[in-house]
Length: 257
Ligand code: ADP
Image (tube, rainbow, N blue to C red):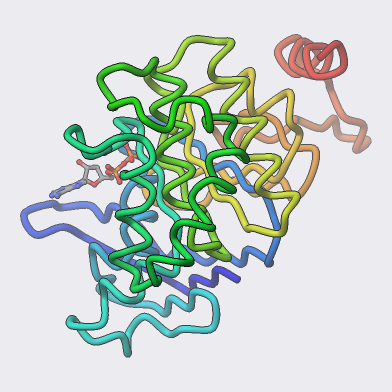
């Protein structure tokens, strides 16, 4: 469970807050897209969850842990409970696919015997068992992202956070990665993905949270579509909804996908 209550954060030197009184509640096993224009506060929200940044005000509880009480020396330990995936993969270049995953487990304190059992299973999940001996430079972008996902899910985190995981990938590879995230979600992991990819958001029809100027301006709990603004569908004086052309087009697009 991810809980943010009235979270505000202003970076030093900034006049306006990066997050402004944000409250959110994400249940276990939800699949959530976090969208918003550049500068809306998406990365800051993720940094609040990973405790890379501290809020000025508000409460953050992740998987039952109130982050205010996680002392500095326990932060690495706390972070290992989350899976985090980045757009630039962050793989270790001098280690093979197998070693990249094994290393993450070693750091987490898993025994050699358990590592040897776990890594092949995880590589199978991401369909990379046959690439285990390759180095990152020998892989395609999509394969690199799958290694990064394998590394993140190897410890079976309850929550997987992906910050623009498909930003550097082509359309087909993007679909593959999103399918993989869906599969991981089906196994019971909560997924929070930031993205600018309108097609992916519209085709999955999951929960979509929109940030704008540091505020949650829209939260479509299910069947969500990509929205950058809080523009409500206008109503006539009789209360009937006027469907704007843009709205109709968006609806149509969703239906044909
Ligand atoms: P997004 O991820 O949606 O692009 P960010 O969370 O990166 O948005 O940024 C939100 C706001 O906070 C922006 O106005 C940005 O300039 C500001 N910001 C982000 N990181 C820092 C930082 N380290 N120092 C100062 N301002 C920052």
